[in-house]
Image (cartoon, rainbow, N blue to C red; front, side, top):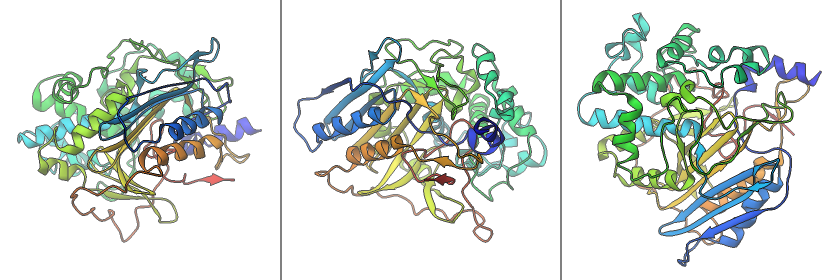
Length: 450
């Protein structure tokens, strides 16, 4: 009965929110911290990171910074069979955190005059977004998810729409071209009139990759590697291409899919061409903190483009509460010590959250290797609470705020843009399909039950 209820909710909830956790394991923890004195309470960070594992996460690895002071920690298992411990420096699939990298590359080309953010997408890639929609949807709408273009994930993994996960295994080693995936999303019904609402869609960021290809004549993943990854000085961040393996130290990555996969299955080897410029990157928590600090300090973009990146639309839940503010490939949400900026990501078996204070001084990044551990209620309409959600939020707040941390002083940021189509309301919906922003560490889920 429960399995049937879960299947009935696939199109709405099954693929939507991402968070950590599953069955509690032992308390193995490894911590390596720089000797520099600072405001980070390493003992409390260690304790709260361990609590995530004890709440059900197989393994979690994290990097926290306050200026030049660092905490690098890990808790739990990289392999549930051998009990191999996780390490703080693990490489990891970071999912939709990739979107910030892609957005930076687009904004760099905008600064060079090659991309006009308010120009129709059809002017750049008419073969991918033809007709009236190609004339209405702008590059900016792709960047901030107001295009209304549907997601491709359901058609890329068709069994998910039927409430089963067989296609995850069938397509492990498949290589798929961006144009094919974009075609799936474009062929599905439009979610809303372009510019009228916020609806998260991975198709937007594959289209942006193809816009980059058109205006530069280069493979977009190579372009992002040269202009963003290398410029930020990242040593452990790369696009895997068609290679299904992660090279370097990493954990096994387990997917539960809200109980449809029981016990959770290892998806650490996977051909990630299905995610591309929307979510294929491999990185470490240390590299991600370095990237967001460089971005927020203005090292990767001119001030004009950085200001545009941080001009947001409100994302609301179904009761009208603003749960986050989405810019151009980056979002802002509130913490007990003020607003922070970043993104999260999730792919099969791997979750990531990265947040920084507005000037990039205080930073938090975490990766974890068990996905969609939550369960649905009997009706299949709401997620049941899980202790790992609270543990993740407690660790985030300790990392970014802490008992001795000073409240961040916001850097000058343009005033947020009004929510699109305010008259009819931009009601926030569960972000679409596999990779959704602001999951466990952001705002409460739209549908939730105690």
